[in-house]
Image (cartoon, rainbow, N blue to C red; front, top):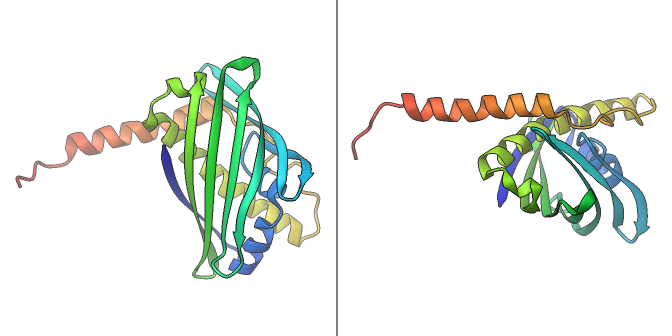
Length: 191
């Protein structure tokens, strides 16, 4: 399934692009994710943990930088992992496009995500909503990390918390309810 998100950070384009050059640092901005093994030549290994409702999934996986285009500020990363306990698999191709947005930077994220096993039991709407919540947290953590790096502070704890199932579920349910209410209350418009 293709999931598209856009986040903005209040940092100049060149600073954010430089930050994106450190893939483990970028991954650490996503709650529950860490790429703690540098396998060389743009290959990394790590974990992603998320709780969706009563299900907690931890994926062991690998990521690989497919391309990084300085001219267009576009980066493509492939990732794949297996859930601990054989509960499913996930594969993703992430395309990140950076562009100026006023004094800050807009980051367009296109994720082609394939899930199987326990994670696949959730519908596209729920997965999309959870992803949007996580991308919002990702943007906040990225801003905090870049700010801390500029001040010369230790960033090891920024964004390192795992993704909270209750908070994510509540925000995702709020988004789903909003979609339903918008459909219900939109006035009928004949063709």
